[in-house]
Amino acid sequence: LVQLGRWPLVFLFVACIGVGSYLTTQLTTPEDTNVQMFPAGHNVADYASTQRDFLSDSGTTIWVSIWWGLEAKDTGDYNDPSSITRLWLDESFVITAEQNQLFVLQVCQDLQNQSFVDNTEDRDCVLERMNLSWAGLVDGVISCHGLGVFGGELGVDQICGGARALPVPEAQFMDCLRFYIASTGDDHSTFWARDDDYTILLALRIEYLAKQRWGTSLEAIQEAYNEWEDWLENRNRDAPEGVGKSFQIALYWHYMETWITMELAGWSAGLITIIITVIVAALTLQNVPIATYGILAVVAVLVSVGGILYQIGWDLGFLELICISILIGVSTDFVLHYCYAYIRTPLDESRAMRSKVALHEMASPIISAASTTFAASMMLFFCQLLFFSKFGTIMMLAMGMSLAMAFIFLVSVCIVAGPEGNFGQ
Image 1: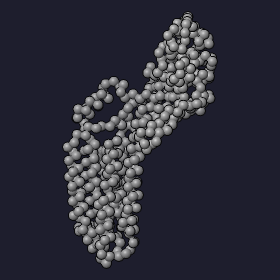
Image 2: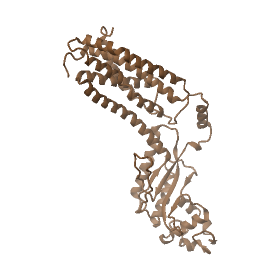
Image 3: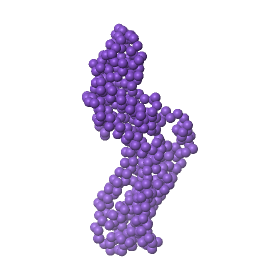
């Protein structure tokens, strides 16, 4: 039957590669980046959905921190999980200069008017709070007993150099800031050297609530990250010396980076598999035409499965990317086994006879292997975790398409244009 329909099957094989490639490239990341571990209707899935839709969004907020005084670099060994990074101080950080105080305060005030910031009272800028609290601090003489860094009774004018708002004279800024922190307990955004007098401010942090929320699409998260990054880079360019090396971080940016890495790993795994397939085919088959057909058949398996996943509505979610990475490794076996069997057939036989002998030799072991894998994959549909049912789906598709490519399309190609004799060795 394959021999009779060999030409239509060859054209169908080429069309399968073309259409499958197009549909595979249409696979995108989901609009909701929440990883759904259980199917709809499961108690856990319903609870998570209800919490997102109707309850407080406090668990979905994204806090973005801007740091001065630290350097954004990783000194740990990337390949050694026990080797962690150390904090690196920005030795050029100087907050005491009057223009630097005003710059940081202006950053806090300007952030409130940005479209990517949730313009609510939920923000953390110690210099802004210090500036707004000045009236309470300059009211007469304030007792400094028990504040640790001051003693007796001192007026704020004495400590802050007569300032009624920022900027404070450079020589008095540290004393004024320490006095504000000591008298209000507002110490969670400043980080000091561990000496007895707390005279050296090592780092300063401000935190604002992003407009974006957990669970939105990867594209929306990347857009939000770029808005924060671009805005801060522009401010750093205009910053006076001593406060021009700030950087921004957020927990969700790490999640975004992990997702991007997973997506890149999925595509990279496909490319690496094809490259390894080329090398293995060249070394073992040692025949240019048959190796080429085998590589095209492997590509056809990958893009066919990808096209089917797109047609049934899958996205490149976290679970799907893991499954696809595994799929790529099991897509080569049947095709290359058939190619090797074809090369081992008698050289004096015709293309049709060599194709028939190779099919007869490899049909039983390949079908047996595919059947056991297919049956084992079916068992995964009884699992409640979505990962296992998705993995089972991909494995079943991989087995079905690998059999089709090896025993239908690849056989028809070999009947039409398989190497004869020593051609292509």
